[in-house]
Length: 273
Image (tube, rainbow, N blue to C red; front, side):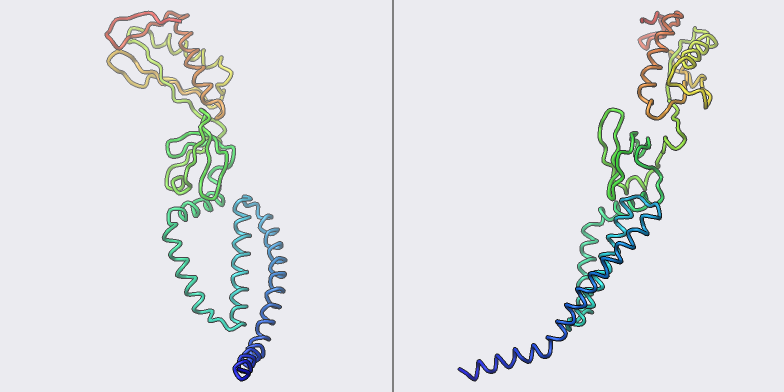
């Protein structure tokens, strides 16, 4: 019995003698290393902030650098203790590959988010059109872009879809052209109708003086002449201006007795208030 106890004690003492200094040295290096890395992370964060990058991406880069440095520190400490770091790295690489395959879609959104934050095709507050959706950019996240439509709907657009499609940044030029269409019967005088619409647009508070208003005959259908009405407005006035201009043109047609052709036939009738 005593002999067995002595054997266990001897093994423990041998372990302490063989591994004690290594473990102690590893703990000391780990403590000192973590303090040094904390100091380095502060310096890196300050320098990245000076580059003018978006807060989202500057914080991400600082965090990524911190993780990589800590991973290198822990691997170094593991090597001092006697752990086979080559095998450990292989296991971590295999696990990272498996996770990457499982999160392939999310990683593409993540990479696209980084590109958006770096190259800045749009910023928070801009009015944009993407994926055939129009709205104001409320947030630019790592994985998604958040839009708010004029109808107060919140759209969450994956960043990968944004990068793959066409982005129309309406706020970049400071104006947006309304694509309006008005009908006129063939019997009406085009010069008269054009002057009426022109006057409505020139008097409207939301219509910009520059660029110049575009107004002309777009096409002909079976009952009407289709008139293209293209005024420019501020992006934030898009919907209000569109509704108001249509209403003002209708009122002006009524006041000037401009007739319309109904789709039920070729009969000409008056337009109401």
